[in-house]
Length: 190
Length: 109
Ligand SMILES: [Zn+2]
Image 1 (cartoon, rainbow over the protein chains, first blue to last red):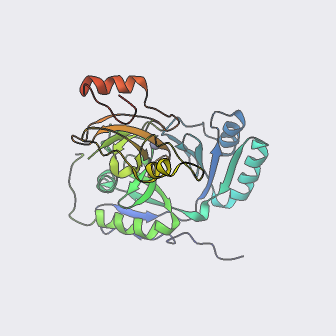
Image 2: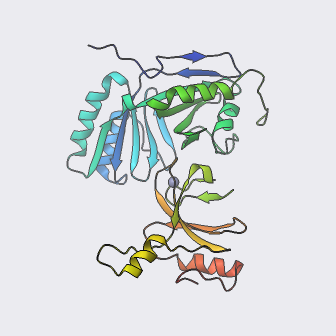
Image 3: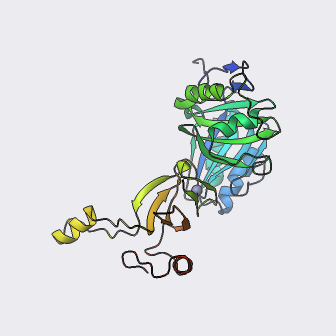
């Protein structure tokens, strides 16, 4: 068996105003189809144990979850070791419903930004209203971080989790560190 | 800077989350068409000072295409609407008329 490593092999930098971490291996399955179809709902909810999220929202429970990606796309999160089993279960539940479920775990990377200034670090990079009343727990946003596409949600009051393309992981890690460099607090949300 | 609302996912964001896709409501003329029609389709574009209709894509978001009506002079966005249509919705045209009486663009007014 080959030695499986994530994009940045859990790199961490806590030298700035927020802690930036690459999260390691995370199971991710892209599911495309008619989100109102019963079999699509069942395939998503039964393997993750969470409810179907509303538009632009996500539901999580530990390493599992469902993220609303677009009107016909979900991102299913599950433990990395269980992706093959999860995918097989989903294919069975989807049956002949017009849909596509694919393992994208190794095509993506997950990063976290945490600390009291996490919200501010994110706000420097994304064209999103990140005021606490504008973006809160449960919301899920696909947007850009500086020059690359990314999606993120809030894990708790001081933690953001990001999903980006694996090939962009180093860029995202570096640009987050630039946005979090020591002494760069703006204090906008305080 | 334009502030656009994606009619597909409902997100409102500034233009850097989107990508412009050129003029809206082009009618395609293919290989068997008249040369004049083909030339018009390929090269001739509206270039208005004022009301304009464009295609946009929410490329850093939900990934979907949509239409937008805006003013090229003030950058005011009058509205956005589905990509799956040949013409702007009546309600949007009326809203534009209220703000820019007498406007016309291509076949629309
Ligand atoms: Zn959208």
